[in-house]
View 1 (cartoon, helix red, strand yellow):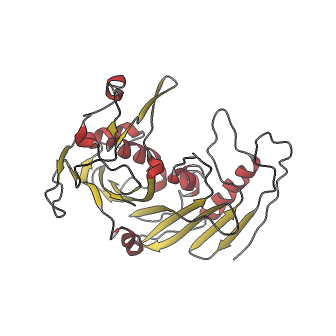
View 2 (tube, helix red, strand yellow):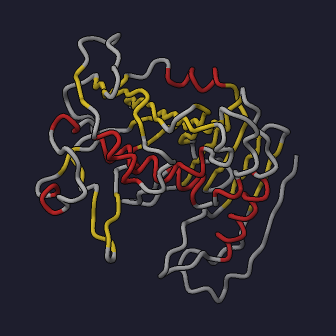
View 3 (cartoon, rainbow, N blue to C red):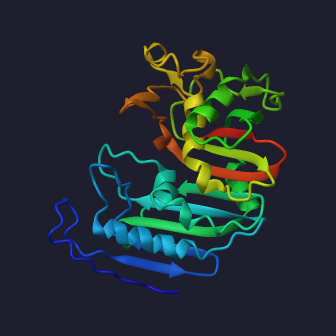
Length: 308
């Protein structure tokens, strides 16, 4: 167990709100790492680099996380809690994984199934932001879903002959399936079918579980390496289209209509440079469980739950 404080001279840095020295408090056990800080890690863009404090925190988390080892009957559970400014929106999975870098997680998953879950946590008592990474059992993760209401389910949807490298393929794979409203809670989807358990759109917080199967020869893929494109494509597939969106992006949108309006309407595609950018309302995502397992083909199963 350790407590650490790092100080960075930020007097000359032009960003507002970064004048205080960086504080990092780290608590470690064999199976968990908890880090409290007075800053958080954003994602650098072409217009704005990481602040020195953000950079230090990022690589502090990076070095601590990569020491964990996840066996095949355990799950990496990541939790984030932080101060949120008015009108600020962030994606939970970005804070915990994408902004830190998939390299921190590439060596910690030893065998199939490789499993990572994430959730929203409370703001820490002694700081503004909390990052926690812990090793727990599958049953502990399942317990979090036991009393949640199922919105939609799909099983063994083909995602092509290779693991998708963009959100498009996940989106198209789902929207190429048939949608059916379940007769009751025991009604399960058939082959190439998506089963929805509510006829009305749901526009509040939600949770998601997705299992990818990959050929056993694919030993490098893990939950964090696939999470960005996977969640973007899947969540967009279950949004309805706001007025005019299907016409603007007719070459991209597949099978528009109310059948797919499960998570509510959204402008989930927007122009970005010379291309387009997927833009789901994943700031509503409060819990996720991503599994990469071995099989003979590239396929995807999943469930989405109400989380209110």
